[in-house]
Image (cartoon, rainbow, N blue to C red; front, side):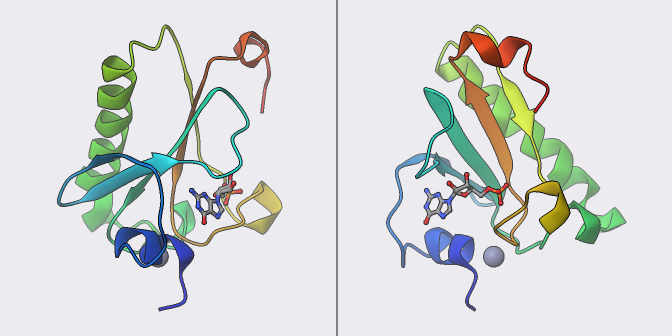
Length: 112
Ligand code: 5GP
Ligand code: ZN
């Protein structure tokens, strides 16, 4: 498997892990776009939102709950959740990931 995020899951590539359980792992983005920039990914390799199937619906809900849990633990006053879909949507890594961004005042009004 050449997927870089699967390698992070398997600890073949180091990362700064902020949360992990049986189904998800969350780690700091290597090139942060905000003071808090965390990537939350399912351990199941799903290439993108376009590849989510009905059997993944619980997993997708739990993905949001992981983001909420991390935000609570970090006492974030507010945050943005972002998923890029497809190359034209800005997705560079083909393993579904949720960006958790916080800590820049301009993010409040930025429609990214
Ligand atoms: P995308 O553009 O696919 O939505 O976001 C991919 C993100 O993964 C980018 O923000 C990029 O900085 C991050 N990223 C790429 N490679 C690595 C890596 O090896 N380690 C970590 N921690 N983040 C990575
Ligand atoms: Zn993968």
